[in-house]
Length: 197
Image (cartoon, rainbow, N blue to C red; front, side):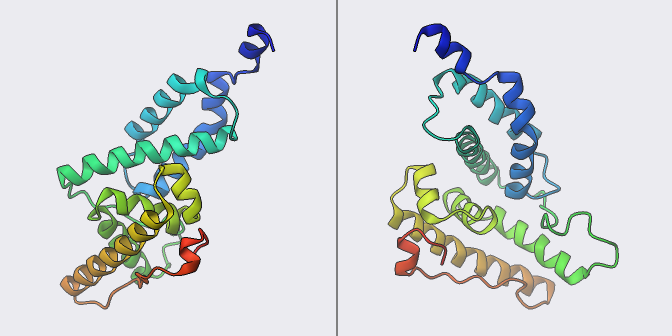
């Protein structure tokens, strides 16, 4: 393949932003919560995508490659938030955003508490919990995307779920409610195989 063919085969940057922008934005909203301001993270994702696009060799689908960049940018943002101990609450679960007014308020409060509790997790654990339980990735996919060994990913998921459950119980106790969400903080052989527990 000639240098000209290689250049012509590369994705057009404007087309990449146009085609993948909506998915990146939705993914960031799922990670940080529908009420979170994700504009800076969105820009950071595409700064990294456009900077790295000339090195993209097509060994993975472009959407998969961009998704990994989203996770890396989200992880860096989580680390900044964790250090700053931001108190801005995250709001409703995406499935409930824009729900009719007669939607169950208890369910809305449960999801709000879940997002608030997620913010208190260590960024490494938070990323694994979000990737697995919100994004629906297998542990194998998470390990490949983050460069972490499968046992480490499984351990971080179990620890993150355990901390999240404790955070939810503490938040619910402060509000005089029962814990809104139950998460199992256990690791199984299926987990280590990369399937969802």
